[in-house]
Amino acid sequence: MSDAHRTSRAPTARRRATSRVANVALLAAAFAALAAVACREPVAPGVAPPHRLAPAGVSRTISSVSVIDIFPGSPGNGIRGDARALNSSGVVTGAALGLQPNSADGRPYRWDPGSTTAVQIGGSTAGTAWGSDINDAGEVAGTTQTGTGVTRAFRATGNAMVILDTLPGTTAVSGWTAAYASNNSGKIVGAAASGTSPPHAVLWNAANQIQDLGTLGGTFSQATDINDAGLVIGTSTVPNDPIVHWFTWLFSGPMHDAQTLFGFTPSFLLINNAGEYAGTYPVAGGQSHAFIFTATGFLDLGTLGGQFSEVTGFNSANEVVGNSTTAGGAMHAFLWTPLYGMDDITAKSGITQVHGLNVVRQTLTGSANFAVDATPPKLVQLTIPNPNYPPFAYFTVKCPTLQCTFDASGSTDDSGVVQYTWDWGTGPSESFSTPIAQHTFPAPGLYTVTLTVTDAAGLTSTMPLQFTVPTPVRNQPPLAFLRPVNCTGQPYPHQCEFDASPSSDDYGIVSYRWKWGDGRSETHSRPTVRNTWKHAGTYLVDLLVADAEGKTSGTQLYVDVP
Image (tube, rainbow, N blue to C red; front, top):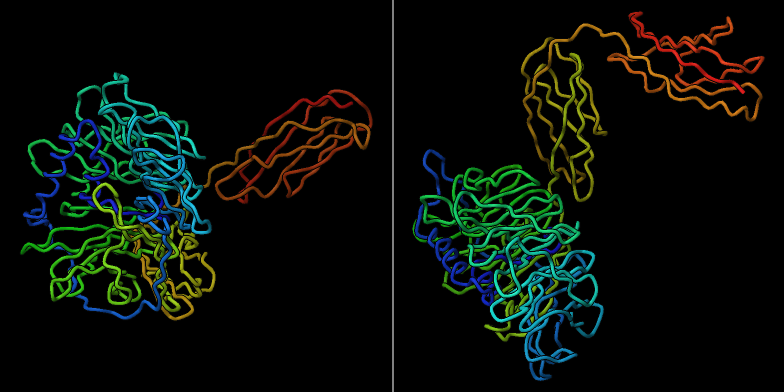
């Protein structure tokens, strides 16, 4: 899903979401193996332990917490429901029982915070159905029972389900599909099984066509999250290891074991649109801690004083919600921000559990599966005072010669970058207010340039980059190219237009010499020109382009002049 509607993908929640799937035994076995990582030291051999923070204690940065009932009057009004995902506008989906038209089973719905009633999504179902995710266009991805022990993934752009494709070999009574997450490009990920085969992670494109993503060499996999760039994460079995591994997958490439990225196996994982990760990992001594993994590295988020914390939501500002134990052993909900650290939501509001987090700090509380928890769900708005986050430094470099061009326009800040400082590694640093800079190096070789970006409040971010300045190549001759001409004779008789702008040179073209085929010639510095002949006829136009060193290239074109 896009990070704007990041929701909980905790293993317990996933077990609930897939409890109606025909191959429940396979999924349960996979998650049992995943849970086993809590008993294992997470650091891979030869990899230094990740940085771990001391317990964070209670921070008082949340200024207010407000809630809106998703099903007002529930359960007294006969409605029971849950909230499983929200988008960047706070539009929610999940499953509900008792909405109109009423049914004996849960049905997916779409609820807008500006409305008073959740709208049921109908369609092909023979049992319970639920919405698993919702993108910023309000498109719901979910799963519906179409027969006894058979489920199908669906999308709903309006109030009716459209069933997604199945794997080859699937029949009306065998095999299954389930949708877990979606993005703003209309892609949906989940799991699918053909016949009695173990499930594989799958992706559906916007045309509902299915793609098997394979495994990490084992028999089972499932895709649990996708960002707007199409980067997919999920879990898979691997040969000769009882521990289920997390994977990453992009486009048509193979799966990659996330353990090689982190140096350990997370017990839970989410991804945002920047390709950054948040999750939970087991810490030596029986503890589990929430963490984030960004361009600046791995960071253990600590706890609210106890031994346990977990991530249940993650947004594009690298903000996290989750649950943590306190020093007294109580389970509290928390909000973690890069600027303020971990704050206790429960101490501020009494709300003890939240899941999902969008870009305006809306999250969900209450039931995430009404079949096992009848607590009425609510939309929760968290407010913190005037946040200002450090900027994010990023730049690219191009070096066609000893003079290189540096582009830091990819650097970002919530209030804007005001200064770009470049440490060239070859002399004094330079600072600019604009993101583009040039620097000439004394000789070819390997260099490291460091960029520091600063926002209006003085917060900074730094990015070093090592690259090679190449040996300058000998000047190459230009390439002459002449576009088809316009010889309509309008507005002047016998006049044609010519365009040589596709001509190219490694150092730049300085002149264009034209011979018009009637004894006349002229030279210009610009690539486009008009010429008028005295008489109609067929003429051979000759173009010669030259660079600054006088190297030339030519081309010719016959034109019929009206």
